[in-house]
Amino acid sequence: MESIETLLAKQADVINRIETFFDLQASRSQVVGQLNSLQHNARECSGAVQQAKNCLRRFRTDLGPRYAEVIRKMRLNELLILHLLEQLDRTDGGGGDGRKVLQAVQNGNVGEQAVEQEPVSSLKPAASLATDRKMTLLDYQNSPFVSKMKPRCLSFLDFNVVISQEDFEQIPKYMRGRESVDELVTFLQTVVVACFEEKYTLLYKNKKAITNQQDLALWKAFNLQQAAFPNHKFVTQGDIARKMGRLIDKKVNGKIQMLRHLHIMQETRHEGTVYYFWIRE
Image (cartoon, rainbow, N blue to C red; front, side, top):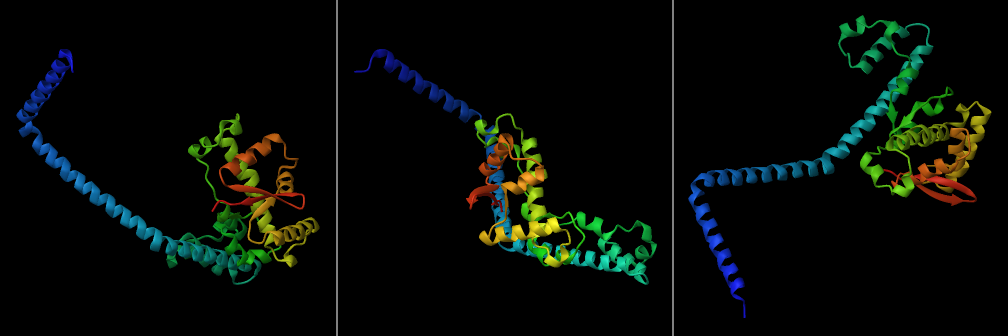
């Protein structure tokens, strides 16, 4: 049996609900228009979201691959233009006009007047233009640069990676220690990525284009290592130590472990050598 207090409390609750209902009914005329407008806006938003989903799906399945192919062809054409610029730089006669035309095309000045007004002294050398370009390793393998004897500092899109603050905070605190995201990014770009780029710039060069004996010894060692892992891009612990000019200490190893945690690199051992695979797509 319920007590009198419980029954009274229930009756009071019912009375409050009835009062609330009458209050809402009294103000119904004032809110009906707003509710209808809100419902209409909700339907419009739902349609817009569905349209955005369809556009995104179309981009991923159709426009995205087409865009990537156009960019790949554009970079390859830029490399061919740079190659022609180098050839023109080596000629003594009749090369000035050709350099003007190629430079105008490179700068997007396709008008004849713009070409005629472009001074030869303002042209960038081909080597400096090359340093401003990034390409994929596949494009590099098919480019004239693999046959050039002059060393080049190239950057590859294969090793483009961004570490955000949110990514960094996913690393366990015991692993981060006192490191900051800026310190980790600096280590990644100036040591790890630079090590990969220098290695594969040399690895894919034609043997005849390598004149330095030290580079030739590294080229042979790199090719032996690549034969063990033909389907991977990697550097060794020795490559990173050589890049830094010192052995890998506990602090550097901690940064490498953080990059492994972020699924940028993967560590493996083979015949007593530590390898770091690049696994970020």
